[in-house]
Length: 204
Image 1 (cartoon, rainbow, N blue to C red):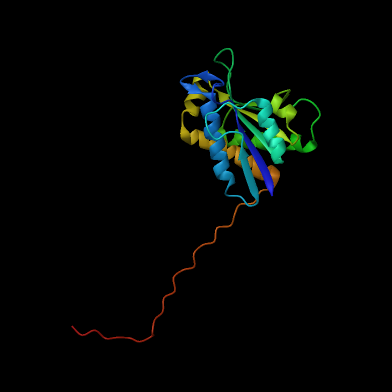
Image 2: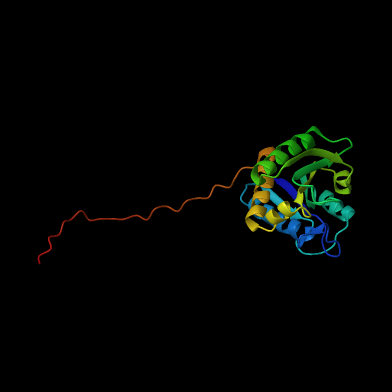
């Protein structure tokens, strides 16, 4: 059983980045729910979310919850922002201290799949001392899915179909790097038809 912890960034009194009529906290929750629903199509997967509503949870509580649950992998989902409006595209982060080889390998795969599915400009794979990356005990990644204050990225983020692409990228990456297998859906057996083999002549 693979236990995946999804962490939609911000929430409640903390809206996260804001711009172009969008709030980061709402987008991250929508994307996380889409990822969760897609992961349910795979075998032997358990999913837990730091929040499934608009509420505030501290960074340390998010990490503590994932640690106590015994998660195998931690995914923190965010939307970026910059001082100007020129920032655009996707980037991912892992902890900038000592990490396992699996953490680096997972980032490589997940990052590539999100860029491929979303078509975002690739801003690169990076490392930072973010609290949720530092305090979690399992391999962890933080994704920054476009810039909320960039008009082009924001227009994409307003489209549910584009949020589906972001979710698909996360799921494809997780499936590849964690070796997840899709559930086999049994097809219903075709209805049996019986004939007596007799021929009848119709008189008109």
